[in-house]
Amino acid sequence: IITFNNYRMLFYMNKYYSEIVYGGVDGLITTFAIIAGSLGGDLSTNTIIILGLASILSDGFSMGISSFLAEKARLYNQNAYKVGIVTFLSFIIIGMFPLIPFFFKFNNPFIISSIVLFLFLFLLGYIREFKITGGMETLIVGGFAAFIAYYSAKAINEYIKN
Image 1 (tube, rainbow, N blue to C red):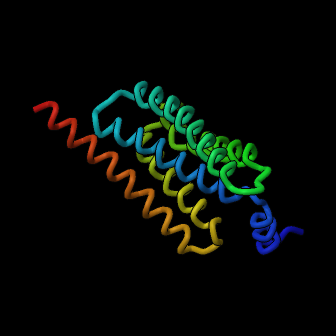
Image 2: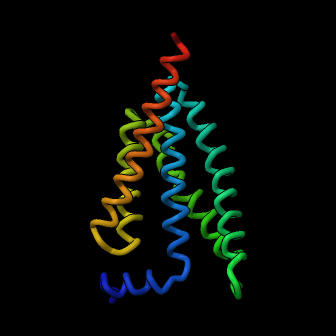
């Protein structure tokens, strides 16, 4: 039987959990910034999907390469490739979730995407240290990034229109 404490211990024994959190949080925030910025700028759903997918792939690759290079710079490290791949996959897989409501043309996709973002940010923050405060901290920081993306795009769009 796997209890919560056993699960927590197994999770911490995974030497790549920090890359999962790192790649996942950045994937969520980057994707949602594309969504929020696009909506703030009155762009179409198709544009949101195109920009979101292009961003996920290119930014995920960039994060994976950056993690690989940073890990390779450490002395005696043999796992640089694995670190880069885990960061890349975490960015892409977790970062896709805020786009799902737009793919399937849900009613109110931005609201659903926001809920997905906040849920995943909280969960990734929580698994960092298995504390509610970790979840709240990641949720607040990510929410602030989404707020900046939406309202800066809205302000820029209004400026350009006038």
